[in-house]
Length: 137
Image (cartoon, rainbow, N blue to C red; front, side):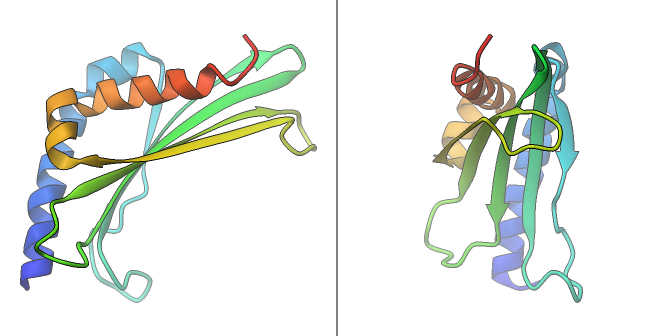
């Protein structure tokens, strides 16, 4: 294992532990969790990445409101940089067969230290609330 992979594996382990700790707050918030990680090298993965999507949707009249939050961490490009996790969210108002009538997005970079202090559950629930605030009730 090279140094870059070793750093990735250390951060991956921390993120997995944080995700496990966040299980109850995510369930209480009614969020589904999808793992989109690429944790092994193979013909489709030139680099390793940890990626989870958290989603919630609900009816709004004849439309559906949806908020999706993603947390992403990829193999570091430079070993001297502290690990950062990308948090992005998307809020949509959808009607079957049509483009979204509302499509808002937001993104931020979180240090691993900050994410450890706040917890994945708190960061994700806060991002869902931020996205939901852009949608009709």
